[in-house]
Image (cartoon, rainbow, N blue to C red):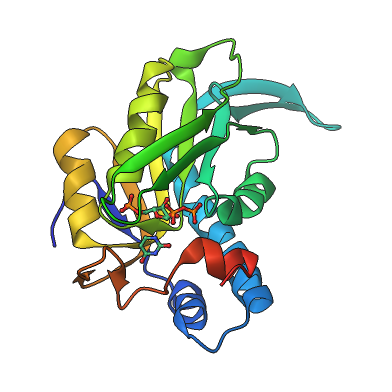
Length: 212
Ligand code: PRP
Ligand code: URA
């Protein structure tokens, strides 16, 4: 599937950890641990989307013309399952602000229902970036709803980060938001008749939080 704005991570650790979390015999605490590791690998890749500006400093020995990240970084986990990616991203981007977005999909209609949103006050929104975090991109309804909210804030750049994407979800996001890059650890075969990703990993929220 060639979509211009899709980045599929290609790393041995990503492939082996994704296999761990797909395994139905992986317990919820192991699931959380591997999601945490995957989110750090994903965050490292996501860091390539940052813009740098020059920063002059003095080392103990001399002047140095270095760099710093332009603007601010906002992490926007989609509740609930997006919380699983938050700590890994926060480790890689320690100064990031966190914006929680509550969206769940109606289990019958698969339509996204938004129920909570809190976004930080930023000094320079135009030069800042938001990473929208959700392990699963299925129909794409929840992600499109999140992107709509993020765009309303006036933030300069939006990047989607997920663990497992379905082709249907990638197409949906690309159709309505051609300008948005999607980073994913895996691109799966399809959605089943009830909107679950196949082969997928099941319900990410339930597996993360042990609510099966
Ligand atoms: C899951 C997942 C995404 C959404 C993806 O959340 O974490 O947010 O489904 O599906 P979509 O692409 O078809 O919209 P869910 O609605 O199950 O809520 P939860 O995280 O609270 O369990
Ligand atoms: N949400 C999940 O948690 N898993 C899927 O496969 C699809 C949506």
